[in-house]
Image (cartoon, rainbow, N blue to C red; front, side, top):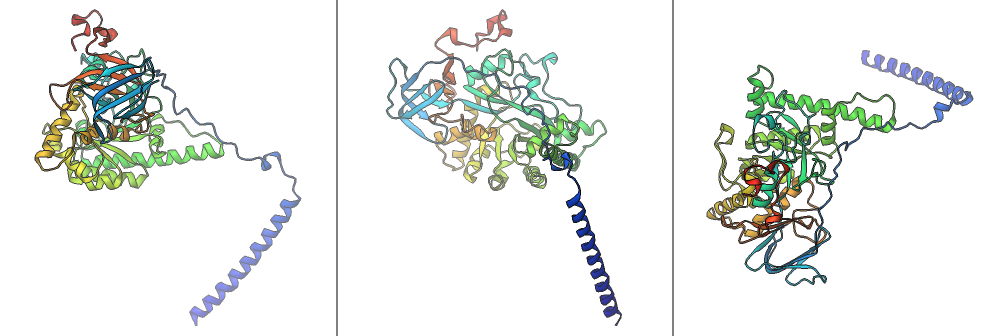
Length: 481
């Protein structure tokens, strides 16, 4: 009975409230109908003015080139294809044709590549050239803003010294035509990376790869917890690392919400935060996460954290345990950048194996070699040779042409530029290397290197051996590469 009484009482109360609400609604409607409309009431919302996404734009202009045909040459196209005796034609800065026979325009420069190999230019996804230039003295050390666990406000390009002789050595000795410069790994979020064409320019803007997305350098593990734990502040543990990351992403999500609303509806502009601009760019998919991370278990946690906050990890760098989670990397569409056999310099780098790259390839994951070193960048072809040999010894049969993907198209994918470079396909940038022998031999080296079809290095021509302004007048004058 008590329940029945309460039900009846609730029904009567609800009915009266609805009737009252309906009357009020009708009155309000009638009142609005008679009320003169103000100018503001009929105006549409005005979008708020956003900030510049590209305040330091690329001014890169390709050096002049000449239509060029390389004949009778072994071709690795960078996407796993090969031609034993083929031809490559490029003109106006682009690849024109690749095949067994190619028709060249009249007046094209013809190079006989007999006994040699043509490949796309190498792309190093992890470099600090310019930020940690050569000579490596304290005055030039500008690669690590180790003053806080989150320094997403710093941009690597603001430290790049274009005269760093390391650029020309990477070009002449390594056939490196594109490279990503990252801020250092002391921080959980170390700042923005920048992608450069490996050309001489007076300014870093003159080297910036046109249209390449920025990256956000993040770091797992020992570096951030050691640097800040030693200062008695968070993070001092791996759980502290993730806690600070999550706190920061939560703020970034709110920052993005405010700016999205302002840019859509107008009103009062949110307070600008340079660090949050970068994180918002990640959440919008405009900036790609490049995450230093050694251990497999940490990579798995980071991929879950990315799902929690709605972003994507483009690539893990230094991923010495990536071979343990090739399936997870493939499922998440995340690449792994690794060394061939550099390991054991700290605990989190201990469980490495030389078959890492080959196992990732076998798992169907996107994998690549990287340097993180001003000398290693000059021999990435040899690093891949070591990884390839290790895989074959383990019974994983990978061809030379497929292994070249680890040097070009896969890093191009992880940088968001695979539609423009990374393989010898018609219409792509003519970033090309002619090797004087099998590039997986320690006795081979670049003979000629073109960037956007311009011949920037020729081992047979002393006038085409790049020398930076800094090297002029120095002992050897920089011509001893």
